[in-house]
Structures are given as structure tokens and as C-alpha cells.
Image (cartoon, rainbow, N blue to C red; front, side):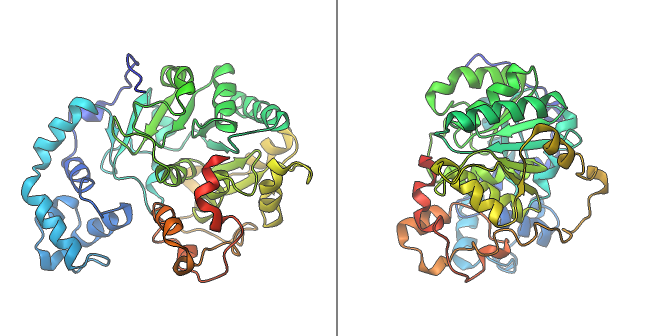
Length: 378
């Protein structure tokens, strides 16, 4: 269900949009072109504006663009006027960023596959967009235990009161608890949706959606009116990981989408933390699995804050990932893509991680990945 009558955020750059903005939006409308291929086009031609007028022969010089996809590009370019499409698109989607916009979130832009268009509602904050305000992702099961709920509220309240920005996916369970705790603490929070920017999902979170729009920010790579789709949520998880300096898994069984967020965060060179739990609690087994593979444990607010305080200032981060004690995290988890049955392969391919090394690995699959379609039931 759509949510209307929301306060609109400010976006001064939209009054005088950069020329490249037209082409990020236009290229994103061509089926088969994901974030990685768009980056390759930009790198090959220098700008997406130049790529728009490139010949089929020039397009096929880009890795991953064969004849069939080049023909599809040619067909779409002949019927799509970038300037006119932008003007029409702004009527229903007045607020969005592209990588050409100065307010596009810096940390997300530095990932291998940033969304070509990131829609938002609420109140953007320049310090958050620049990555100066440290953002922490809170993720976990959709069906938390009282233990998981209690610790989520406890940790989020402590982080929010110390100036950390809390990011989550507005799903039922841990996500909802995290957003609510942050709002109750009087602090901002960011919700990353797997639906259109105007759709509160699950529907029972309509009130939460409105509160976040009033006090924080809601973002999505899907335009207004896009309904829920199970293939959207793996893609949503990469945005959660990309926006943040670290990911905290509060409670998660072995079949949890939170584990996918943790895997992606590790590949993005983000720190991954997990709350230890009893082996008797099946809802926390995923956290124990992460800890056994190198995730950082935490068991008290002060201890966690001390570890997070060791994160380097953003301006001093190395340009290339440096080895760390978490560098080998999940190295036994890459999926054997060729061996996945068709129904699993379709879901897995929804995660646009073409450039990540574990996508090219042939190492054995873990118990999580063969049950990928079930991940978002927990």
C-alpha cells in the first residue's frame, strides 16, 4: 500500500541537475544492464553521455556487452529521449540521486555495484551522505526471540546516543526493533526498502515508515509503485551493507537473509559483528556460525563502542582494502553457481555482485545457499 502526505526532503542539486544525471537514469531503463556493466560503460567511454551516442561496434568493446545486448541498447536508445524521460520521471519520482549527483552516498558509491538510481523520501543529511556520520547496519531474523529484541533495543539505543546512524531494512523482526529503538531515542535512522520508495512493506509497518520519513530517510533503488518481489531483497541487502561502516547481526538462524548481508559486507571490506547466543537457541545459530568464521563478537555496549571507536576516520581510509583479521571471513562460503538448480539460480542472479571474487569461486556450497529462496522467510 502506498504512503502519501509525507514531508519531502531537500535536494538543491535537483534544481540544476548535472548533465550526466540524465544518462544514468536513461541507461538504467535498459533491461539487462546492471550496475557493474554501467560502471564499465562509464569507464570505457569516459561518460555515460558519450556512451549514449557510441556505435554498436564501440559498445561491443566493453567487457560483457555482446551483440545481443548491444542490439537491445540500440533499440532502446532509438525510442528514449534522456531529457524528456527525466522530466516525465520527476513527476512521480521527484527525489533521487545518481552517481553523478554530489549528494549520492559516498560509501555506497565506492562499492563495486552502486545503484544507478537511488530514490529517497525524508530528510537527507549531508554529513551522512559524505560518510562523516558513521553508519552502522543492524540486521537479523524476521522472527526474533525476546532475547534478540531486548539486545537490539539495548545496542541501538547505546549507538544512537553516541552519534551513530542506524541503517536497516524495515523488515519485520530485528529491522523493525532497530528502527523503533532509534526513533525512540530521538535519533535519525535510514530504512532501505526492497519495494518502490512509496510502499511500506510489510504493510503493518506503515506507521513506522511515516515516522522514519519524518525523522530520518527512506531509500530504495526501485521507483514509486514497485511491488514487493523476493528477488529484490538480496539486492536491497547490498545497499544496506554499502551504506555502512560495519554490520551487526543481532540474531539470525542459518536460513536468514541477514547472513547474506554479512557476506556482502565482508566483501565490501566492512567489519562484521555478531551477538553470541546459546547453541540451544536455533534463532541465533547463524550468529554462532559467523563468529566461528571470524566475525567480531560483542557482549556489552561499552565493549562494542570501544571496538567501533577504532574505525579509522573516513578521510584516512586506504584506497584499496588492506588485510585484516577478518579478511578470510566466509572464504568457505562461495556458491558453486553452475551446480545451482534453475529456481535457485534465478534468485542468486538477482544479487548483482559480478565483480566480487567469491562469485567466481568454485568452492563447495554451504548449508545456507542451497536453501536461498527460504532465506527471507526468517
